[in-house]
Length: 575
Image (cartoon, rainbow, N blue to C red):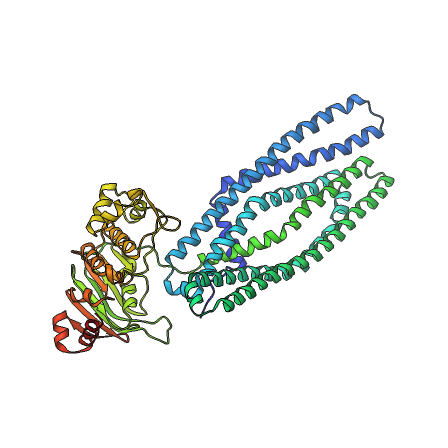
């Protein structure tokens, strides 16, 4: 059953954002100061306009107007420079905060237990680090600079109106109740829709990813129509939510326009009576009216980008929500020995359905132990617990007395049958395990696992681009590449989870020899898909239905005539 990843509450989101801003105090202060300077430079020409109106009405000489014109031109030039700097500073601050959030989300995702990702669905996580990051990134780069400048301009315009005359300032505030009522009507209705829209995008991504990853199965069972219908339904839901919130926004804009009409009418009517009463001049009234009219643009900019802000806010909450997941800290401890010990381990992917039932397993330093059993016996689960990928419900898994989840990186390494070849030059793929490996070291690792010949035969040798979009590798070559990475990493404990299962019959023996060479002298736990691998192990452990049913050497177990003898007989018959 899919359990969605958490979404941060508004309080958690604001708390995270406040911490990010506090760590960048100098950037925040410089950005605010520059923004205030740019907004102030925009207000000065309007107040100068009011002064010019009064001077003209009083019959001042033209020479008295020149200094004001020069001042306005100079302020306008400085304002343009400050406005450009504000946009740059806001964008840079936003992008840096977004980069920190992206790294945090990916860092948490990489350390999450596999069961958490399986239950939540990888599509939701991909949507968060993809579509949600894009939404927040658009807001940081394009929307926030506009909103930031508009807020400062609106604030200083109101201050300037009060500076002209407090009565004109109060008249300008007549539109405020209309703005607040419109926001009070819009926000409670729109926020849940935006959150639902982001969730719908995540659900659509999950369906797309499942269909693409399982495309062969979909074709094999003729499930194309069913998957297309499910994707169409998810896409339609995301579309309907987007259209619905836009219709809501259109009604919101109508309410804002009525508030602006009320505010401008109030200033003009009140200004007329104030002038007649001799409380203010015509120039001050004109300046107040222009200042208020100029508020239309910043307020409209804020409101017209509100859907992007809401989408970014919903995306931000989803990204911060990933960071709220509990993850174990990275291990740093080094074991005193390379002995692997599982004691009384019980585990179930679902609490009510245990997969392992009190498993105990002791692998001595340098010993090679094979796990065998029928499909579903729990072999891969044991390997995953030994590697620290899964956490046991009860019991312990340790190496040299240190819990596997507290081990320093590189002490334990696991190779499964689903080996991934990373896109890029072959040597860089190898350097994932040994970042400072020279070409000679990389070739030595390839030679140890019998892969140097075909690696050198590639079009550009070790510089050949492999992986997606590059030179294709066979399943056996991909497994040998993974084994060469194991050699470069040089872990104390190696776990091979059916690492030769995808080789095919022709390359099976060669790949088994590669695995043996890569793990020589290491503590090795081997999930044996091919019983010929198990036959060469120091000891064999037989699992069935989550229990250890037999344990011993190959010859001893065959002679005992138990479960392993039955499996071996079936294997020989198939061969």
